[in-house]
Image 1: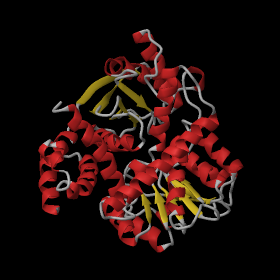
Image 2 (image 1 turned 180 degrees about the vertical axis):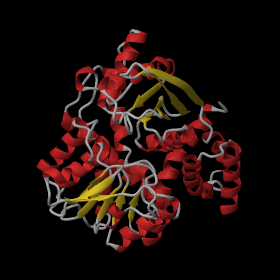
Image 3 (image 1 turned 90 degrees about the vertical axis):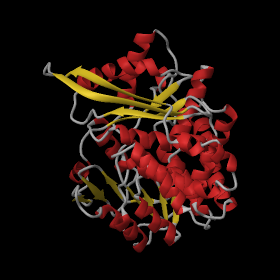
Image 4 (image 1 turned 90 degrees about the horizontal axis):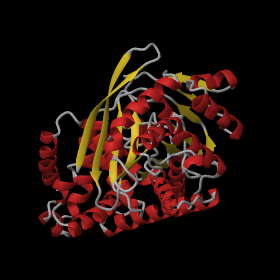
Length: 453
């Protein structure tokens, strides 16, 4: 098996040099699905793997805009439309200085299988820009978003490609982009998800990724007769996903201990309650401040800076039962994973995309802890985006309870699919193999049905 994997990866790396995150995402899927190729020779004959790693379309464009001083700024925009086998391209837009083609391809590739697991008819795609909204005024963010959409509009549509938010893209950015799209095309359609409630958005969409991440962890814990009640939980990040993962965990009786941002993390040994969480939400969503400011309001909490070149992240040394990584890719390395296991962590549910390095994943799998990888555990966000698309198509709006109920059932279904698939292919309890094989098979079978296109 490993020889076949290495030979395949050599070809991928040669075609896509310097795209390390993309290589990592592809390798994870290939390592899971290569062993099933002998059972399904039709996949090999149809060159499904070779086709699926190539995006159907990759778009790169310039984004010029004027800042508040009247100076011209230029950024790069990306949209990688990876797979439309089971539905319109679907996946978020990320605005962050680290964004490049390799990052977008890794995210888009992951999105194919994540979307397939949701049971909803959505293909895979991803986009974004190296624009950094941090420190920019509302007018500057608007100027950038309008310029970005003045090119992106050519490539998207309610039945073609439906972007959403991601890191750096929240309700403000979605609003500016939707407004520009509507002005250019003279149509009001569900072309973006994560919209405001007044103009086609869905209840529960902001909460969906974090809620879904916790629902998935809850299902994993149930397999061992456990629940969130009384569990010590560490959360990384302090954005949308982290906030609502913490909220749901608190509702289920857990004691949430941490939040973080790119500068450092806070540890509140008393645990966060609804009042403290509301302060964090106001700090990050409204005032757009740094997480360190939490200690000004609650001086009993501790703040620790995180060195960007450190060998490990001290956040993952906090004693916990459940870890909810909700910040960004590769935030848990081998040392971090070992620290979590050593300090009693029994469950990891990923809210971020690929937040654990391959060496870290190996530690989790070998230690037999409950490990829910991102493409399964964080699929609640895109699932609820799919529900928003359905509401837009019907010109209807569902209640909060209806959407949350559908989301909860989707996460239960994803968990069941992963567990049963892992069992069927000889790796019981391995959610990595279960998610990758189940998502791959759904897309692969559809590609065979469609012929060589």
